[in-house]
Structure formats: C-alpha cells, structure tokens
Length: 74
Image (cartoon, rainbow, N blue to C red; front, side, top):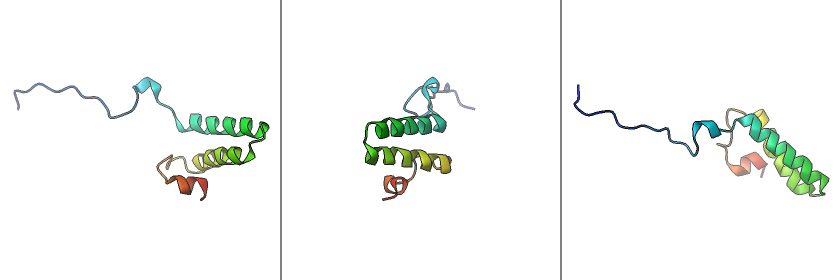
C-alpha cells in the first residue's frame, strides 16, 4: 500500500461527456448536407457527403477510422 493519494483522472477526449456525438447524428448531418447541396445544384459536393453517410451507415463500427480515400472511394 502506498502513502500517495490518488491523482486526478480525466478521460482523453476532445469534449466533456455531455458533448459527445453519436454515429447516427453524423449520418443525419451528412445526409442533410447532401440534400441541401443537391437542391442548390452542387451535385458533385452532394455526392461526396452522401458517400460519407452511406459509408458510416454500412460500416458503423469502423466510423471515421478509415482513410479518407477509402471512405470517398478514390
């Protein structure tokens, strides 16, 4: 047993626990962005947002840990 007191511990993250975003929120954001861009006639940009949404829906456990070129199909 040690005489030292326990140190303060915080998880390594970019935000506090209340600010976390789940994968479904990101997918919905990407789909909304794709729809808005398509309505504005920016079909190429819309395509890439939709491609990210599709990738995350098909591979939810991988998330954004893949290379960008893999996610975008380049």
